[in-house]
Image (cartoon, rainbow, N blue to C red):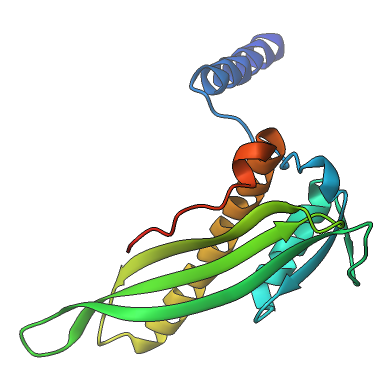
Length: 182
């Protein structure tokens, strides 16, 4: 096979892959378009940790300047609750837990620097289930940690999507939502 034919075949395959990916609706995740009043953001996270780091990074990537102190020029994004818990789901006939769920709960709200509500207090709950192997307890701890990291990443995206929706539909976003029963 000649080098030119090989190069042409490779180019055709790459172009075919690009066309197929664009036709199926696949798009790289873009940064969130934040509401106009959120160019500067003061972030307060109860419990801190991974959520604070990832949310700080995601807000910066979306073009916001995350500031250390609250001010009239900065919107306030407050995470009032940031908790994980692990629940047992199923128990075997020998009274051993065989499945767990890692549950993540976050409450947050956002206000403009002048006190105007951008997003009223909202709760977001996420969970992941996993099987427990009594012979591999070390794997269970690392599996739980990985699930928590995954849930934090998903939570950051959920918060950013809600901020983006508030920017696109400010009148709807500012209305308090009725509590949902779980």
